[in-house]
Image 1 (cartoon, helix red, strand yellow):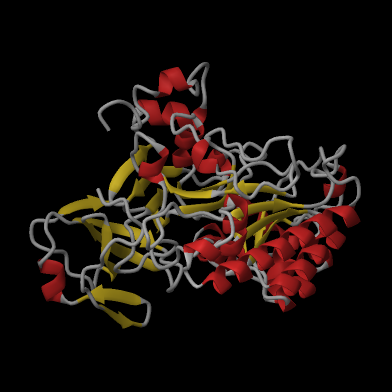
Image 2 (cartoon, helix red, strand yellow):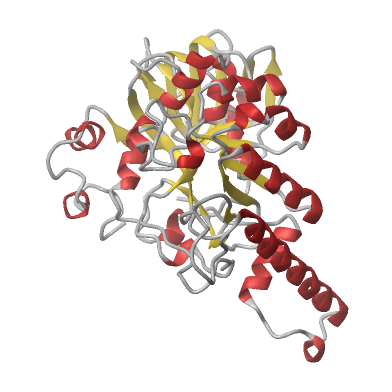
Amino acid sequence: MIMNSQRPRRSLRALAGGTVMVLSLTAVIAQADPIAFTGGRVMPVTADPVDNGVLIIDDGEIIAVGSADDVRIPRGAEVIDVSGQVIVPGFVDTHSHIGEPAGGDRSSPIQPEARVLDSLNVRDAGFRRALAGGLTTVHIMSGSGHLMSGQSIYVKLREGNDVTAIAYRKADGSVDGGMKMANGTNPRRDPPFPGTRAKSAALVRQKFIAAQEYMAKVAAAEDDASKMPDRDLGMEALVEVLNGERIVHHHTHRHDDVMTVLRLQEEFGFRVVLHHVSEAHRVANEIAAANVPVSLILIDSPGGKLEAQYTDLKSAPALEQAGAKVSFHTDDYISDSRLYMRQAGLGVRAGMSPEFALRALTLAGAEMLDLDDRIGSLEPGKDADFVILSGDPTSVYTRVQETWVEGQKRFDIDDPDDRAVAEGGFGVLQPSVLTDFHGYGEGH
């Protein structure tokens, strides 16, 4: 199985016609051992839904999507009838804490050098819960008790015995991820942490200025080792942020905290995704005008945090109407990964369009992680990450039937072990039980 996110592409050209995306007959026939899913409703996200649709995959990649009238199934392909079911792209969770992640400690409020990579437990039960919820890509980050708690990680829920086996990779082979930041109540504590919102912003501003100075010294050295500043892991990570190579994923709730993030972003020019944004409905136009995307969480039982007291489901339609880009996230366990799809249902209930809600579950999140060239929609050339559903993705009655990652079935509701994960039961989510069927055990 190919692990690198920059894996080479086969030279297959899609023939687009209306809502149909079909490969040339020659290219399709050339595929070895393809699988064709037929009879279901296919929702590509980037094109209109197709009834009696066909999805063909091979070697972990999508090779054709379209209607039964337009897509020819290759000779020798395995055909799977999914009549009465719905196929959508694999879901993308833009903010999760599965895998027991941890970043910075109590020594300081800003620790960009800490890496979730070095704390992740791939045998955590959360990974199986995520697959049961139709998730195929998850952005895992540390908590919000720091102004900057360190480097997050983007993972693909393929089989893997170590975190590096499931991590997305950059073009240079390094592990891909963002930078977790936060403001508001959570990072305010006793010294050395800030005690006010103003001091929080001041500390962040000072750290970015220091990173700018470090970047200038590196540039002035012109690769002369004798002139280079002492190596600083935190500064190196912040330089990646300032260069736009590493996206800031910023926990923020209140409308005034949101505006503080937008001011810092304008001042230093880093790329940022706003997370949670409980009061997005109060500053939706300002967020859209700044062209800053939002990773939104919708819950039907709010509470537990004073700064989130004005959270409202109407943030979903307000952001759509303002023209902002929106994805959903679980903040697992705030919302269980198995219930991720409910975010779309809650958004539609509040007035979000079904099309926008499906995009928020899939392609919008992929775009916020810079992974939309690989995932987020059903298109030829993209990874064969998809979910088979019992019905419409915005209905609370719909269940995940199967989850496929890079052409491999990773969850099947008809498998007793998988059903146990999806539905619970005493002891079923204990890691010692999961190890036997998790797919991350010895020999994988």
